[in-house]
Amino acid sequence: MSSEGNLMGQGYTEKCVEAAKKDKDFVLGFVAQRNLNKRERGDEFLVFVPGVAFPPEEEEEGEKGGARGDGKGQRWRGPYEVMQQGADVVIVGRGILNARDKAAEAEKYRKEAWRGYEHLLGANNEKGKGKGKK
Image (cartoon, rainbow, N blue to C red; front, side):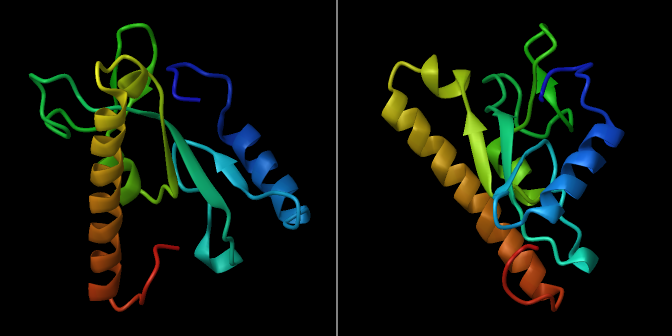
């Protein structure tokens, strides 16, 4: 999903969304890099975004823009960024698993994701879109 050169292109994604729309009572959402919901279709699927990590200490989040990676094809973005792009749930792996204090690191991710969510709500309210992000 978050690896460069994965085989899940736009055609595959569109077919998954079409299949999900046919069985909305069964499909909760998608594991995806972006929000697949379309307001005009009335979509309300949850978006679970993998590949979430903080940038290395020497690089501020968003400093270079877009996804960063580990040099092995894995790409990631920060929790604030993915919430701004419509994520409902952030999926963090190595960022927490490799931390010395896993609980403290998980709390950092939670706080940063929540900050992004609150900012998104505020931006939507200012645009007259009401509450929520979808």
